[in-house]
Length: 102
Image (cartoon, helix red, strand yellow):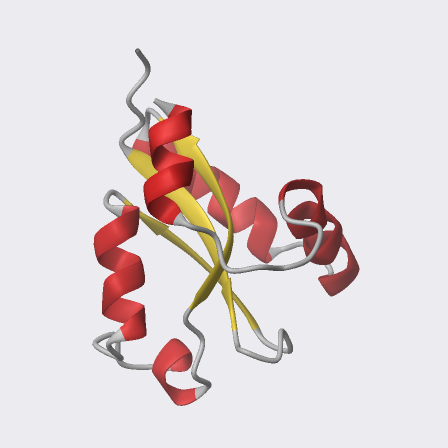
């Protein structure tokens, strides 16, 4: 049973126009914080709280390196990455997804 401890994730707005890439050690908590507008800054300002993509990592260094890599992608490359996991850009059900990954 593999339990990943770190996540790189992509959130978007309801209209899928703005993307945010982040890293966390607790994806459920972090998504809840975004939904509740507890994270000041970019995501709160632009109402970004829809989880559409994530990857799991065992090491924080790997997660941070991947976050930086994705942040450097063009919008087209980010779109392709999202669509490789979530073709229709639907909000991901974390309870189901994280359970399947374990």
